[in-house]
Image: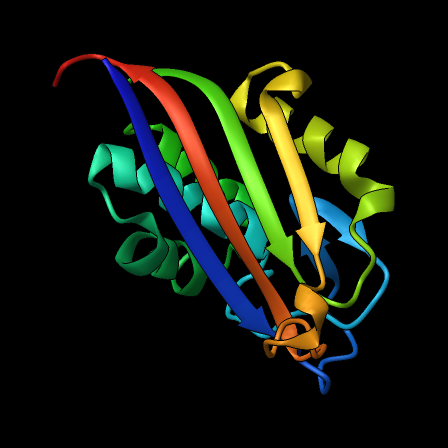
Length: 159
């Protein structure tokens, strides 16, 4: 059975935290970090939410909060791996659409594709990433944060 899911996440920039790094798709970027209990990787959070949509197990909530607060793990790759433990199928394609005015996403798309493909154990050609500034019409386009949408296509058991 083919299943298609959508995931979304957004975070505002944390202009006060000078120690935290800006991570998107498991890749470090130069720039202001995002506000969140974890590394606030909106790309991996949107992907995790898309996996959760298929499995019905909400990871970015109780599960991720426990991992973050009780175990002290803030790496969003760990949350995605937790979501994938509940996934029974084959991911055929992931499409990610990122909205922000900063940082520039395009130069790091190849690195992000490699990172995400590695996490999902799929070919890099099965990962599509696009970015837009939204022409400054939203808070993300105005430089206040980053938003990401993810559409995931998978072949799953009927269950």
